[in-house]
Every structure is written in structure tokens, then in C-alpha cells.
Amino acid sequence: MAKEKSSDKESGFKRPDGRKVDELRPMSAKVGVVPNADGSAMFQFGNTIAIAAVYGPKEMHPQHSQNPQRGELRCTYNMLSFSVTERIKPGMSRRSQEISKITEWALKPVVMIDNFPSTVIDVHIQIIQADASTRCAGINAAALALAHAGVPMKGLVSSVSIGKLDKQLVVDVNKEEEDWEEGEGATDIPITLTSDGKLTHIQLDGKISTKQLKEAVELAKKATEKIYEVQKKALKDSVDLGK
Amino acid sequence: MRNEEFENEEIEQEVEVESEKERKVVIPGEVIVKGHDYLPGENTEKRGDSIVALRYGLAEEFRGLVKVIPLSGIYTPRRGNVVLGIVSNLTFNGWVIDVGAPDRAFLPLMEVPRFVNKNDIAEVMDIGDAVAVKIWSVKRRSIDLSIKSRGLGKLEDGMIFKINPNKVPRVIGREGSMVSLIKEETGCNITVGQNGYIWIKGEKVEDEILAKNAIMFITERSFVSGLTDKVKEWFDKQK
Image (cartoon, rainbow over all chains, first blue to last red; front, side):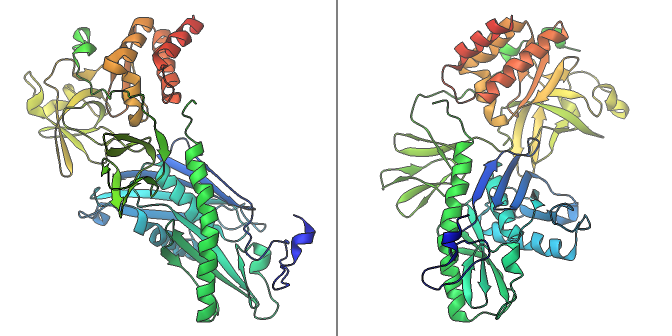
């Protein structure tokens, strides 16, 4: 990335990788990456890559979890052992359980599965390469995979992490920024919005003023518009109408 | 069992009439058309003054009715559909059959037109056997099946494989034109279930593989217009 861009004109703030404060990392998305799944997608933010596979709607097992009134969404988020520099122990951890639940809640408002009683839709998210914002990449991939699986949805969701480095708000934090130690340190705020700008998920880990939090949501709105375009393109380009 | 009399032409198939209208790919939440002159059809919703897609697929407008033809997704059972399934369980009064839908399908013992020893229904059909059935009724949480029509019953020999159920209309073609072309070219007996399961039975394995490859060729090019001619060309090349 060009070094000349490294400082933001208004604030003079310098990001470690030379991005502007409201600049996302280069994104890419693709659907249909897992041939045996009913729907699948890959989503990438710079060096963070997530793969989501959707199975279902299918009969819910175990049976006591069946809901005769509506279908259920079941997400599993998992970081593969080689996704980070230091090998992590494979399998579910406290962190991955939490993120699985968060992902479920972020997606649930847009998924219309009321007409599939006693069934479940399984969403498996695998992080194959991690450089912070993995849950956001995971949610973006999962939204794509659900659409690709033909699940009725009110719309897509797009997720982005807003960071507060010292006092400066930045869009789409990477690992280096997440470990920011100067001044007030780093605060990470993952935000998920629908394509019409409604909030489905927000997390806050650290301290922030209410005024700045509102600014963060506004920044996220602008950023998710760009993410939505990438997601839309991925879905549309996967169909070859033979023209 | 009754394979000799397998006449697939007898099986009624629901054929979607191919229209040459302009179609566009839509994603969930995308506005298809604006204005009050339109009505929301299948897989769409009205929000304010616009018609919004609820599923990923191809949007189509016909006389003001807007609908989305899904490109993916699991099979939704409909009454009268001929489907292929695998026996997944035996009960005291019938068989539980997996037809690829989220709900289980049940084939009652009474449907079998000959005497069956109730203590050994596995003699007729055992777990893992493939069977061609018709959907008799779709109730909340359960599907009832029938095998009383002609051409239905246990499938012996041949091969069975699955394709995307949304591509079945293309494999059958207009009034069965595509599937009869494949039958002519390969000399195989083919049954296409609405749930995407396809059964092929030929004299030689080579014929069956050729028929399978032809079907795969169609599913990969399901949006190309004039596909029947392209399949003819493909068969000429294979020879």
C-alpha cells in the first residue's frame, strides 16, 4: 500500500498499514466454495479469511431441541489451528462458543425460517486465516452462504469492526491495530447492519463515550454499504446466464 | 420386481414452461420493481411501494405479477410429485422414506398391491433400498406417499444420483423433450424425481455413465437457451 497515504488529512492520524481512517482492507467474496454443502461462501478482509457452509433446513437433532413453532438457526464458529501464528488448540473454546452465539443473533433477524417448524439450519464458519475482525468476516460469509443455500431472507447483513485507537475511530481493525497500546489503547466494536441500515449486532469491549459510539455506528453504516456491494457482486457473478 | 414394465412416459411430470422473457439475478432484500402496478408473487414481499426479493434466484415479471425462481435450496414437497427416495426405517405398518425434504415421508403397508407378511416387511423393501413414489399428501410435519400408480415401486439395478432439485425442470425439458432425447441417445431407462434424485438403468454401465454425464452437462448449463440443441451436439461429440 502507498506510503504517501499514510496520514489522514483531517486528523493527522497514522495507521500502521497506511490506510485512511475510514478505509477497509481489500475485500473479496465468493460463493459455492464447498461443493457438498447446500450453500457456501468465502469472505476475506485483507489477511482474514472465513469460509461458511450452510446445511438445511433439515430435521433438528437432538429431538428435544426441536421447536414446533418455527425453525432454528444453529451457528458454529471455529478457528482452525493453523489460522494464527501460534498454533491454537483445535475444537470449541469458550471464545468460539461465545462468537457462535453472537453470529446466530446477528443473523436471526433476517432469516425467515418460521415456515420450517422442527427444523434446523446449520451454519458452520471456519476461519482459515486470522488477522483480527474474524467474527465480522464470519458473519459476512454466513450471510452469503445462507442466501446461496436458498434460505428465505429479509435481506443480507454486513458486518464490520470499528476500532478506537487511543481517541481515533478507525474502520476494520487488523491484528496490529487491535494490539495498539499508545494512549487509551485499543477498543474493538464489531457492528452488524442490514442492507437498509438496521442494527442486528453490536459488541463493545472497552471504554467509549456515547457520543463517539454514535459516530462509530455512523462509520459502520458507510463501511457496510461497501461490504454489501462486494457481497451482492459475489452472489450475482456466480450465475452465468450464458449471455 | 416390476422393472420390465417401467414406462417412464406414464409418469406425469410437472414441466415449467420456459419463457423467453428478460430475467435478472436478484439477492434477498433487493428491490425488483418499484411502483403500485405490481403484485408480489412467490418468494417476494411488498415493502412500501416496491417489490422485494426474499430469495436468491431469477426475478421474472408477467402481467404485473413479480416472482423469484429460486436457484438453490432444498426440495419442497408438493402433492402429486413423483419422487425417488431411500428407505430409511421400517415400522410395523410401513416404511419411512428419505426423499430429501426436511420432513420424513411415510409409505403405508396398505399401498403395496399384494399380500405382505406383516412380520417381515423387509422382504418387500429393506433399509437402503431405492424406491419411486408419488406424494399423496403433504401435511404439517409429515408426508404421505403412494406407490399405486404405474411406473412406481422399488428400483432394482441401475444407478441413482442426486442433482439440485431446482434444475429438474431443465433436465426434463419442455414436455419431457430433454429426457426423451437422452433416452434415445443412450438407450437407457431414466426416471427423474422432482426431488432431484435420478435413476438410470441401461443395458451396459457405459450407457448409464453417458446418460449421467449428459445430465451433469445440462445441470451445469441450466441457464443457456436452446439447450436441447447443445445437448444433441454434445452427444455427437461423444461418439
